[in-house]
Image (cartoon, rainbow, N blue to C red; front, side, top):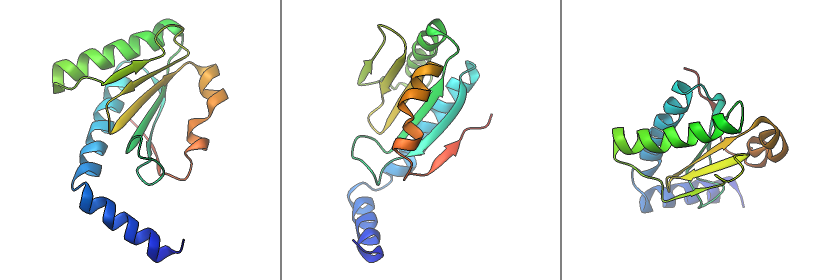
Length: 136
């Protein structure tokens, strides 16, 4: 696939989903801000819209302990509902708190403990997308 084909795909995607990328980015920024407020570490936003149909953005963050990972996920879910009337369509991984995923459709929030984040290396796996460090 050459560069022209890629640009055509980008244009086609934006024609099918007008404004979706901008809305997804705003949602990812809200999620990142909440996680930052609750003391998550190493928060990154990964723009994945060109790599997968799963989500337009991944937000990746690390908690200090299983308790902190659970608290981050719980507070994110609570505050997104309370402040923005947005609930995740699914939540996975709450049992062992190594990696909890909150699915906000266009944005997946991945909250890891340190060991699991080092092991799965989502930033490397999805490295073709733009990686945005979230700085508070």
